[in-house]
Image (cartoon, rainbow, N blue to C red):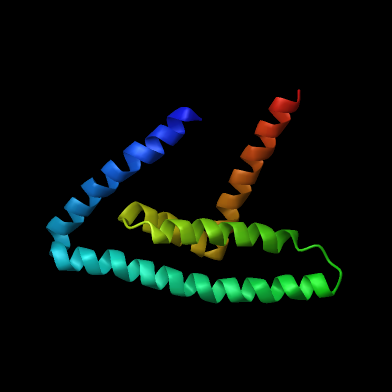
Length: 125
């Protein structure tokens, strides 16, 4: 766990800077800046739209007496997406986009939840 955290805190910014330099060589400074800011605005806008839809579905299930487990998991995925869109950079925008698209969000959330459940089972025995 420590190594993952170390790589995330140290390695991700270094990799982001390297990629931004490469993108700057392709698109120029202003093009790269527009790309990073544009993807963040695009992602946060769509995140807002999906978030309102999710809240509506959550309220509908709660009022009908159903358990909104799927909506809570989807909400967690949207929180992940928003977190990565706020951080400037190409990799973080890509991760934010992956968690913004419903099908890929569900796919990766299943993997994450399965991993967490497996880890909890290992600690339990």
